[in-house]
Length: 215
Image (tube, rainbow, N blue to C red; front, side, top):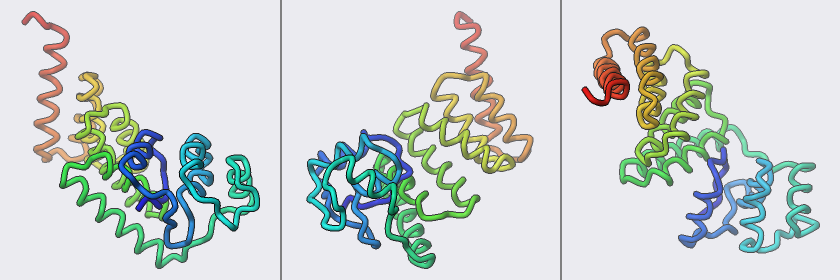
């Protein structure tokens, strides 16, 4: 099954899903196909990738890449009621958690991205960003992890975990000075947090070694 709603992390994951045999013709609960979802997000690159693999949709008057994008732009997608959106949000978060626990970090990140389209609350959205950042950290993708962590901090500036995620991303990118600052910011918010204290010490040691590699 491929029909998910996207806060799109990139075409690479989509290509992996298609190469693995995912069916691009399966619609979601509202009857919306992946190619329509991609068009709704303005992702022409994904529309182009999905177009040769997607069967013509009878409700679209012009079956072409430009025709799909134009139709979705003018008429939008079929709406989903609030109760169904909440149910789908919970379902996607659960599936993402299961994928993460089984080590499928890219799939978990995609599922968290999909969950973002179902109107999570601001705090819930920040939590999803933090979780997606962790997926990227486990996949050793520092830049993506940092982007999500920094966005998470903007949404919840008083949340120590957001600082921790940002610090961890900086550590992966070997930017130890900024990692120290992020961890220190988190400790100011939660002075008794042992994980942040340990992370700060590690970052400080790494920064020291980076400045004086011969010592």
